[in-house]
Amino acid sequence: MTEILHVDLPERSYPIYIGTDLGDIFIEVTSRLRRDGRRVVVIADQTVARLYPDLLKRVVALGGKPLLLPGNERTKSLAVLGKTYDWMAGEMLDRHSIVFAIGGGVIGDLTGFAAASYLRGLDFYQVPTSLLAMVDSSVGGKTGINLPSGKNMVGAFWQPRGVLVDTAFLEKLPARQFACGMAEIIKYGLLADADLFHQVERTPVWRWNHPGLPALIFECCAIKASIVAHDERETRPSGGRALLNLGHTFGHALEKVTSYKGYGHGEAVGLGLVLAARLSQKLGWLNAKEVERVEKTVHASGLPVRLRQPVAVSKLLAAMKLDKKVRDGKLRFIALRAIGQAETVDDVPEKTIRSLWLQAGAR
Ligand SMILES: NC(=O)c1ccc[n+]([C@@H]2O[C@H](COP(=O)([O-])OP(=O)(O)OC[C@H]3O[C@@H](n4cnc5c(N)ncnc54)[C@H](O)[C@@H]3O)[C@@H](O)[C@H]2O)c1
Image (cartoon, rainbow, N blue to C red; front, side, top):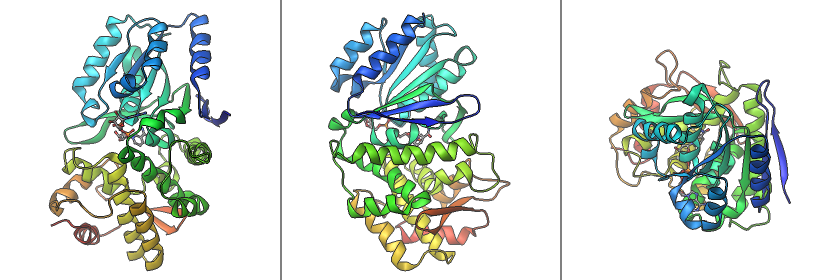
């Protein structure tokens, strides 16, 4: 069965289809677009293309060869963005062409930004294939690439025309990547929905064909859609879309300092959630028992709760200061008033953050 959720925005509302076999919807959507005379092209994760040859055949039947790219952070770079523009030019895309991004968050972020900027903006669809992309990155319109100075430093808010979430893709997703998706699911529970957190606390490990998985994904997308609908461009001075960054100020710094090799994005976020919970305890908001529940749930989902190797705390702090969430030179954090309720905090002393990193195994 396919569920449809709408992201309601003033100018670019769009549907998210969530189901267990959306092959038919993919065909229906692309056929409709082609009947309207629109050129449909695909940028896909090369691993996904290899694992799902039927999908590739369907894509090739649309006309034209897809651009296949590796699903790793190095793809979110100026060099690969340039290659993508060259491919778009070679395919002679015009302003009515439409691009499908089939892959994890890396392919979605890069394709979305290429679509946002090529010919001053092309329509695009997201077909997320990792759990993380299904519950988070494919929804909400944040697109972009990394710079050597930091993650997601160049990008645009560019909403997709639609999102097709097909849980059948998860069958071959490696367990480690599945766990990365769980980090974002735990994040949603912690920031907005205590029942969702309890659900994952009770069942931290999910399989691709668990009958409850589509509903879990729906719940996360619904939380994100509602937050994005109220603060599409993250302009609210407090709360709003920034809350979705729970655990991310820590996580992005760790990813950068370990050159995007040591930890998957979701793994870095998982550890970031634990640090955000400990920060909340230092603020007097969570108690020790609640922090322990967060840590246990993150751990049971297959995510790190300590650094795997010691990392210099000075490097982590320097990376945090370059984060986009810095406002007027002050580090900005999301902390938990309670499980299921997050708030922005601006005035956390550096020594507090340093001590959290040291407790997590930094040197
Ligand atoms: N735009 C946003 O709002 C937003 C939100 C969260 C994260 N992100 C970004 O998303 C990225 C992380 O996304 P990700 O975790 O999906 O990473 P990813 O795209 O690197 O995918 C992870 C791995 O899974 C593989 N893979 C993907 N789908 C598969 C499938 N169906 N079967 C087998 N293997 C598959 C990929 O090849 C890759 O090796 C980061 O760059 C992060 O910054 C963006």
